[in-house]
Length: 170
Image (cartoon, rainbow, N blue to C red):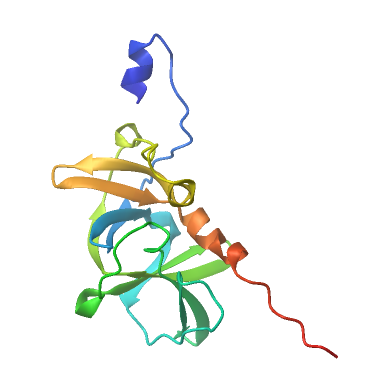
């Protein structure tokens, strides 16, 4: 992107995309590869037993007991228009945290850590619908194919789309 700016005679372009100095955790969702910045990942573990919560969106997979706390577990595959495939024994829970908000992200597996210079990150494709594009920061390409970068803030803010609790009539 910076090279394109230079070829147009511009000094630089601020795309809003920031590099992750510690790299990205690469994970699988719907058979595709995604990454999330290490700075947002608290831990990675086996998938816990989930309890579904009635009346919640399909992307809220349920809640789990995680280290003595109730943890909301999200399955963002429906929001990414990704195939819902069984997680199997390779499935992992990626615990994301920012400030005081913590959620679990259900994945089909974690494939390690990858680094990427900010110059290699392109914006999400313009062909994505707005809901899908809002969950992504951008994408980059490795020799084995493209990797989309999830925006952890947008994933954590999905909680704002949950139905508000019903008040008990008194």
